[in-house]
Amino acid sequence: MRLPHALGIAAAVVLADQASKAWIVATVPYGSETEVIPGLLRLVHSRNRGIAFGFFGSSGPAAQLVLLAVVAAIVAFVGWQLLRSDGNGLAGAGLALVLGGAVGNIVDRIVRGEVVDFLDFFLTIGGREHHWFAFNVADSAISVGAACVIVSEIVNQVRSKRASRPD
Image (cartoon, rainbow, N blue to C red; front, side, top):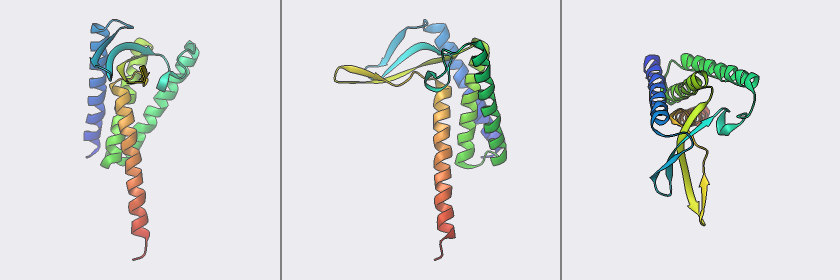
């Protein structure tokens, strides 16, 4: 895969993310939930002003601008890494996913002042529901992309050690 394909992946993530969020905003009232897979998945309409897992969500407007600047700097760094890799390999695909997810969430921050989340996975154990934090397509792309970059690095380290070992 080359850079144009990687950028295409990033753009597809942004489009899928924004389309899914627009659908949720238009069809699911804020604060409501609909069970999709009983005992496992609900669609919810929630908002997150913070970063991952809601950290810094209750901060004021000045802190929100700083947060936006930090996220924009991260996007720039990931984009630079993607350019350096020329979009090649598993790491390139992972960086493309991270870039698309980060841009998708930045669009929300700029347009709505917060990020729309809607996927609520949970398990019922001992009569109690245990929820993961609500998330969206962009968050999923960031997580999968980061995992791809990590796996790629591990594989490269193993190959490097094998290549440097005398026979």
